[in-house]
Amino acid sequence: MRWWKVLGLAGAAGVVATGVVVVRAERRRRAYTPDEVREQLQARFAQAVAAAEGAEAAEPEPRAARIRAWARRVFRRRRAAATEE
Image (cartoon, rainbow, N blue to C red; front, side, top):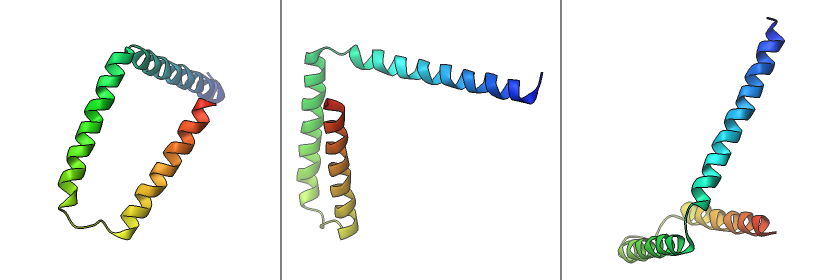
């Protein structure tokens, strides 16, 4: 077998494997009922509130960390807006 054939087969196998991973993730995501999603979001919110209350007593975070957190929020919002369209 020539090397380019082996390379082509490896590429095809990679594409198939990626497709399998994407399909599995999509099935897992769609398996949740709206009530389950709501419960998970409420639990995450409760954890975030508890963590924020605990962090209030701590020292303020450095400026670089605040800028990184701000940038993450902005990019998440843009990504979410792009997926809604």
